[in-house]
Image 1 (cartoon, rainbow, N blue to C red):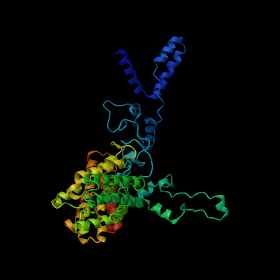
Image 2: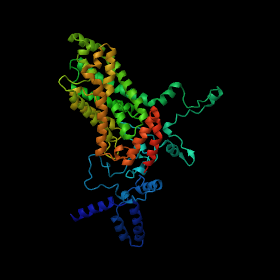
Image 3: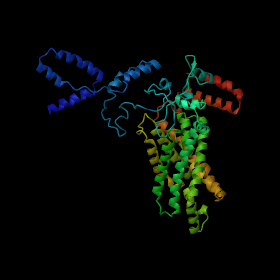
Image 4: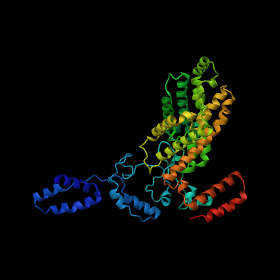
Length: 500
């Protein structure tokens, strides 16, 4: 028992010993052992613990030095470097052994260079292009409400460093052309100076995000609609309601994997707008993203109806009902059941979107317990399937406005009649659009109030910065819409008065 306790204490000492300190302490003992006799030397050598391999991760002290040079912060993080690799008492987390105490990941989300100044609790700085993606942790950006100076002239000053304009990020530069070969020089071919080899490659480069959002939405909704049509047109012989819910979840998982690295694969206006309000996604891109999502849903509705047109017609003949009154409409469209009140239908969609967006923000929060690389899309697919199983019966489980609007417009063009846009007191407006968007905003707000600590959320703005951010948005809105432009100078003065 005594030997067991000694070996346990020895292992604990080895875990909590810093490698650099251990090497410095072990070198004097090795020098002093040279003067001893051979037996004593071998005995001491056997008692020494083996050296651990050097930690290839940059020491926290080096990170602290870099952060001190950048921010002027004189905090000492040496103690963190000595204990960061050790397991705390009771630290066996189901989120992983390195969820909090372990070494930070080698590659993380985008972090603005000024983020540490305004959020000193965060300890990493990895520049790059921000991508608000559902397939990876969400980026950390510095928003106007976080800045000390957010006027246009302040931004111009920040864009210059050492008297020279900053070069654009590498991710925003066009692809470079292939060096001209000797054969092409002899044939007199001119090099492509802008780096594009044809017109389409140039169009695709500048419109890659809308194209990716359109493609991801088209694929996801097409697979979901086809799964529903196969279930209802076969009179429930092909699949069940549970398999239909699973198909919708995995369909959006496929869409996220397809477009997540380019556009972020939001595939849902509620997600896009929520990321813009609560995570700094550029507001100017929201309209473009929503338009691409709607076009993708219309494309998906057309493809699904064309593929299952024969099955829909056969179902209509067998049931002796118009196509719009068959069960195929339950696959193409969403809407409350006949016994569901409008208030219940509204809050059913509201709650589902709130949970969906809240979970997406939790998965993208690297300070919480994000899943492993590439697992966000898989988990979001499972979440969508669970939401449909739990909340999809009352309204059909839309939780995504284009998913209802695109197929609804398609069946209108297919001759189902104009009542598809007027039924249930114009459900397609106050359900999939109003309830889902406001539900997503509410779910994101609740998550930020309860858990999120990042400075990009307006919840965490100091009061003066929150007031300044609202003034800046009002000034920019008046300037763009040319409404009340005589008040812009007063707003700029109010912004300067609210500087920290």
